[in-house]
Image 1 (cartoon, rainbow over the protein chains, first blue to last red):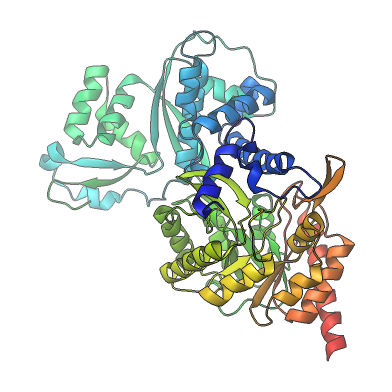
Image 2: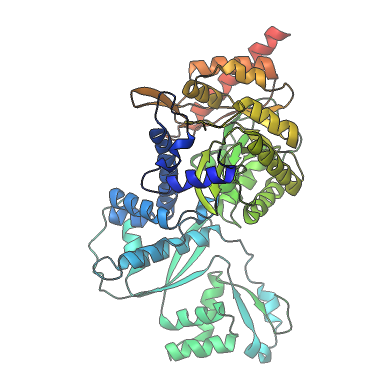
Length: 260
Length: 289
């Protein structure tokens, strides 16, 4: 008689394999053989996983079609089974899986679109935050701005793609037939944020992107402006600050002796 | 339409029929506050740090009694309890203050890998001790009693030495948990494994059942034999309504839930199912009075 752990290991190995029959000897046949009984659970497990991935990656689903998506998702599940009872986290490695699967060729762009969809998912589940306390910022001595650090909204995610990832996403997220897109029409620097429960996506120029990336990395305002100007000598710090505060991308600030 | 209150409604769950809350109905429930006795939400759907689902459930909670029903804790697993999952569940309990909190008598993971389905346990003394300990751990971590639900099943393990109802009643007795009796799951398992539904009902002690579930199932053919699948995709069938009458007679007036998860219909269809359950409850108790 197997221990409970041995039984669970055998059953689960089977459910994640091509054929689930490894644990067949542990199961009563009584009219229906063990294998088809196990296959019901395997189908459930696969369907639940695919549906979770589909809800995270609707644009990938549309781009590759249902059949290819299912096949790829099942293969992905075998290599990267869910590590949680909460399926919202099951698809984090899917973009890298697609990247390895299509490391060259016409479908290289898929991994970047998937990355964008995963960042949208992260953004949708991230904590809320109150807007920046502007009167408090006005109290800060301008001499202290060198060391001032701005904190970004918890739902903000940044992503730079060599492909027009957002244009592909926008063309495929609605019901309409997507227009033809030139995949070689240039990369995009993107910011994803949640706004009233829905994803809001922003395109940025190289200066703005470098500025926000520097703030994300924990650099001071002054250092972030330096990085932005290195990327784009015309970067206007005042304008950028206004834009990102208005967009609620900057939600907090801290001085070196201030606790975050 | 219901009166809106700023604070969550507290107190015990009403002995009336509620509806399983699904995202398709969020907007309607928030904006129109339809007449529904209570809602039950899948705990994991509201585990996020923030966002629209969490905000939505907070608003619904302000107007309705709530039950949280977990599908992912993997109580029967021989792995350690997932501390992240348990912490998120604790946070959800603090956020939403559910009147009832339930999990499944099943497992879905081992070695850190999950299949996200409700797998049946072998009904052995070893598994009984293990699950009882786990339920007690969860109740201690959450500081409250949980209800344990019987699952539908499509297989049985050869070395089971207990019946499913002996196992379920045993875990409740050892851990102090309550029982969420899924009437449809009893029917599905009885049809699939050839036991009498009444044996199941008689095997569960009175007083321990604190909630009923009702749902629809599907039938498929497998190797020339019919097998019932717990799809939650159709109305409650006549046989399950009959079994529900028997369950209400035996276990009394406890909160009942209508579940529907696939091909989800309009909320009014679910309300009609709930009204049917309420009329059965009322009729059974009128006869008993």
